[in-house]
Image 1 (tube, rainbow, N blue to C red):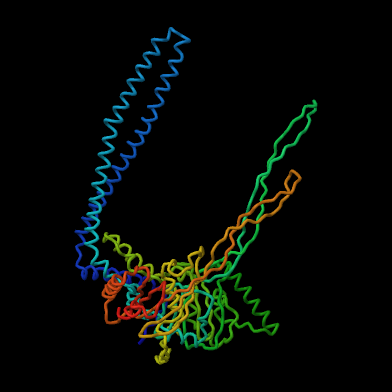
Image 2: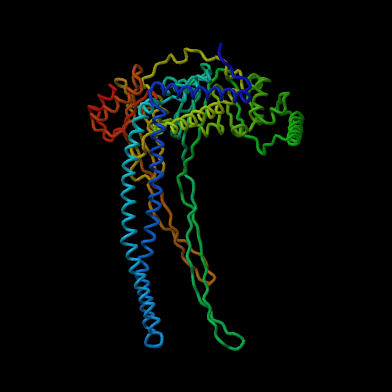
Length: 599
């Protein structure tokens, strides 16, 4: 029997604690597999930190001594000047000759003393400190290398998909895909999903919730907005006036004149959406938006419920449709009064679902859970919420790599728990609707075979994961909108054309006029940037990593492949079970193309 999550808000803490224990156990098992000596690493790291602390102390002393040396150097020039000024007074007052001679002798003694301190004391001490710092740096490098050697066996065990696999163990209701196949994407398209939107996919995760497929899509949208550019000049003029005595007075005046213009400006906005398929309530369409002036106080609820009742009464008088369920508080906070099929709406939001949705909306635990958007369009449900905005869909194992076990441990556990929290609350609305968690989708929906292996959105996400310099036009100064076009699949390779559209910037000057208080019309220059579209097309080849290989073996194969052909590692990306490679100069007969299929 499949799992169904009831009371998700109440049960979250329990799931969180389970996942924390699982995460700690997972790391402990990795440590055992890596056979690292944690205590030895702690000792090495402590030595490194002691050396760094000692180095910083010496560096501070060196800086202080150098500052004193600069001060003494200034005195070298300042004291003789004082002596010279004193000597000038000798011709004016012969009675002070002895006094000034004594001052001169004293200054000479001081200068000699300063030279001695500078040359014999400070300079050698600075040299000694600098030599000690060099020795310490060598020790730091030596100990750091040793610490890396201690941790490398553990670092090599971190792989893509750890967070997903561990989340599946805690929330068995979820099953995540390694990547989004074209077969699965075609199914979503057949149910009304528009895959040919003008947005670019920068992160993607697909999977199933009790066999019901879902997509987590991280997209970037682009449009041309406007930007205000401003310029200013300062004008000066003089006025002449006479006072009561007939005297002429001239005054200088100034004024800052400003002007602004609006010019086209490229705007980019990211969004994350949970797209859920269900064969339940296929005729139901609605669009839930966050409630304005949200408040959970009793007075607010009573006041708003009265308004809602009056609205329903008015609708009945005017012979209009305005069907409210018995749970008027749910109607108020769910804030969605226009739905196409009332029977299916009530099936979807059973009394249990209504209560649980209300619990979510009223709870400010972790996130502002009221401000979610939920749109149902027949078989597909689209959800946007704050947890999705926080969710990181692009995990790279190298982020955990360190020579310090304690840093690895803290980062790994914090990162895994953050991911679990974000995933749980990304699905919190679905977890609140029991019928949406039932195992309903037939297993044979994936029977249609597709020529291409990976979906277009997956191709886009892979292309976007490369350093932008690999795909963007060299003149582009803005973010790029990346779109892909599948060409063919041959010998297990998806051949994909990648187009990156951006803008280059050209500095322009516009001129606006403004009247000054001097009575004249002035021209004000305004600098602005004209954004001119530029694009670049490259070729990307994508293949599945061999399922019979462990990921660390795949990494070794890739490393060997890169070394054999002298390819930079930023030309190739590995994601769970997919390998993608960007080609600056594509030639299908290239030996590299033939060899990549063997990785």
